[in-house]
Length: 333
Image 1 (cartoon, rainbow, N blue to C red):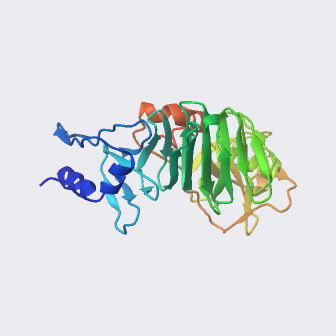
Image 2: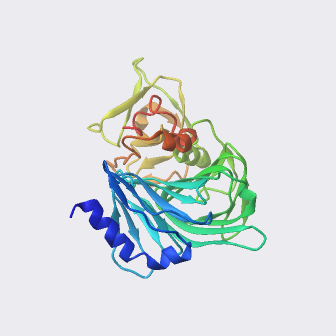
C-alpha cells in the first residue's frame, strides 16, 4: 500500500467527528497521476487545510499523534485541530473557501472557534505561533475575529495582513489592505493600511515603505538612526552575522542612513534591517548615538526567513510583505 493511500485511510479513520461537524457529503478519494482529492463538502461553512510544500502535520482534537499530510493534500479541520509546518512546509488554511490564512515554515495554527450566528456573522478564533498572512475574500466586518499571537491579539481584521508571533525574535502585525485592530492587555490599537505595530517597543502604528516586513517595522519602532562613515571610499560590508567570517550580503556607501535595531554585548556590531530579515555592520564605521538598544550575543548570526518553490497563489499574499523573487532572492530561494 503506497504512502498516499495509507495517509488517506488513516485520516478518514480519525476524522469522523469533523466530517459530521462540517456536514461533509460523500468522501471521495481519487488517486490518479499522483493527485489526491479529499474530501468533498456540502456546506459553505467549512474549514480546510491545503498543503502547498513539504509535509504539514495536523493534530486532531482529542488525539496525541500528529498526522503527516503530503504536498497537494486537502483535508477538513475543525475546532481544536492544530496545523504545524516545519522546514519549508507551507499550507493554506481556508475558511468558507474564499478566505485563507497562509501558514509559513516553522509555524503552528490552532483553530479554536469557527461558527456562524443567526445574524450571518461568522465567528473565527485561532492561535498562532510563527508567521502567517491572512486574506479575506469577503467583508472582514462580518467576522467576529480573534487571532491570538504572543503579546497581542488581532481582534478586527483587515482584508490582508501579516502577523509575526515569534517571542524573542519578531512580534508584529502589519496591514497591507484596510485597517485592523490589535488588542493588548492594556489597549486597543487601530492600525491603518500600509502600517504596523510592534507592541514590544510601543503602541503607536508606524507607516512603512514596501515591502511591509516586520524587520523594517521593528527597526523604526526602536527609533535609532546611524550614518555610514567609511574612510577608504569603499562600501561598508553588511554581513549575515556579527563576525568577519559571516557571508557578505550587501554593501552600504558612506553617507547612507540606516535604522539600527540592536547591538552585540561587546558593542562591536550594529544590527539593521535587510530585505526580510537583518544584517550586521561593524560599529566602528557607523556614526550613531543610541541608548538602550536591544542586545544580542557576541558572534550572533541571523536565521533568515526563506521558502522554496513559491506558487502564484502564495505570491498574491506574500508580495506586499516580502516583495518579489527578483527583489528578494534571499527569501524566495
